Length: 340
Image (tube, rainbow, N blue to C red; front, side, top):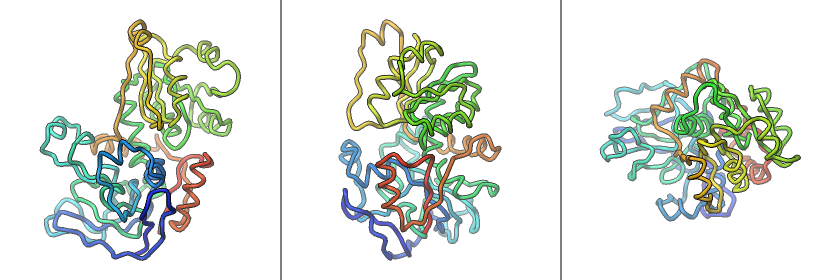
């Protein structure tokens, strides 16, 4: 089968023929219809995130991709709850043990034994991939693969982050960065009946946020940012989907007292905030790691109802390196979905 393979960090992925995977007793084989391209893929290919690379055993050579949607074409002998022909998706969490304390507390996304799709096991930048039947999620037939794929990481990540940050109806919620994650965050926050303040340095992305229902759109690089935010009113919650440290600094300073900073985007540098300000204003910092299968099912229900829709662009798998380069230059509006 055809696949995009990572052999070495900081080198282009190679499009090559590899053996089609064989599914084990508890696995299914999926013909991939589409796989979203995530900034996590780019960071991994570029050898970024040293904390991740030191903490997990990255498979090499590796077929990347962790926003996978396709149809089941084979299943193992022990699989009874997934049928051949069903449309399913595979997220970042390829497998979790189900036995550790985190799993038993409903926090499978924090399982220390988890396998990660397109990182520790082969992912979806290919014609076929295998997956644990227990960890695939059904995709509504009304949704195309292109629509559904980005929800398995980008959508899931901001959905769980919104829940973790305690977003409630009537609150003001600032979304810093209206990219692949941010434009989905705008829609999810609107579903929670909160007032959205979209923040970016791109007028094109701010206009997209307005069309998605953002009540306010603020260019962080134009004029007096602090004054603009003060006029609107400090947000109750700031969700930072950008990987920029500067965005975090602006988000922290813009929060109202008793505000919550949601950590989603991953800058290369460490973040630091003055403790005296946090104490004096009773501010909270809440991080979120992708999401669970339960979160994903809730998100799929919203998407199936037409309440959340990712802006996507379909590209052939053979253009994956060109897509990465466009991502490095910030030229992608929404999300790219590739297929072999």
